[in-house]
Amino acid sequence: MPAIYSKRRSIRLKGYDYRQPGAYFVTICEHGKESLLGAMANNEVKLTNLGAIAAGGFQLLPSRFPSIEIPIFCVMPNHVHVIICNTNAGRGEVTSPSPIQGGGTPPLPKDALGKIVAFYKYQTTKQIKNALTTSGLRFWQRNYYERVIRNDRELEAIYDYIDTNPANWDREEHQ
Image 1: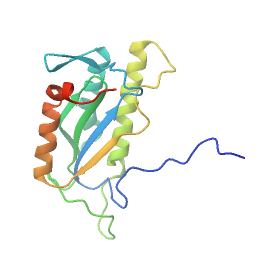
Image 2: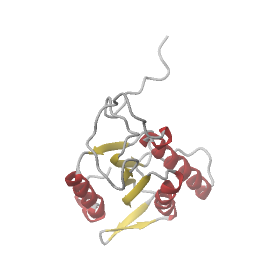
Image 3: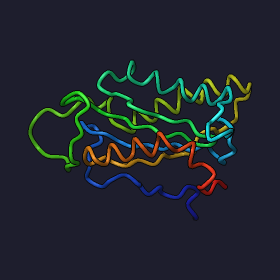
Image 4: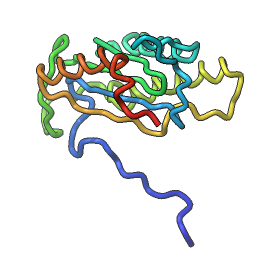
């Protein structure tokens, strides 16, 4: 009997504890990449109502997860970029990734990166479905892309990438 569902392969960093303090670069794409979040005009993103909902979702995260900070995010026409800093060990500190180690007290499980992204996607999808007055819509892609930011130099480069992403839209491939 053939399997109806195939087993999903994790794209997360093997052996890495996403609850630990650190900074993460996250990209979440629209399902179908239809550019429902905004349109480009003069190297700027003009957000639609749905794009404004996506932007507002980032403002909810620190109140729901007090140990995180969002130093920058960008809503593009068909995806969003964000840096999420889990600051359990110190304000804004970027730490090198390390595997799960025994001993010590682990950070709260609710601050795991996957739970943060899931909360964001759930809250924004709920509002987007209300705005579109539809119930069957799948708005975000099933997963998300993330990169563990390893040091301050990387943090600065990714910050600049997010900050200049709208100006580079025409140079990138968007299909």
